[in-house]
Length: 83
Image 1 (spheres, helix red, strand yellow):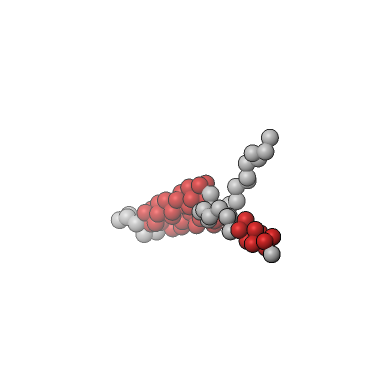
Image 2: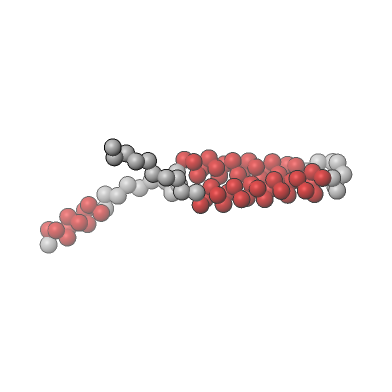
């Protein structure tokens, strides 16, 4: 009976931390900045059918969203501390 109590005690001492690593948050912030830059390129008073608004800005936005997916799915390798 004491063995069961000891197991529950050792399993309850797990470390609680953030869901992602630091690199994931940095990539996500970079993706938000890229998406914002893409929307910024879509604004302006120049011709509505310019290359920047029709081609470049949507491409930048899509790249920003793709970077956001990478930021969520990227799993960094664990450092080998046993040596």
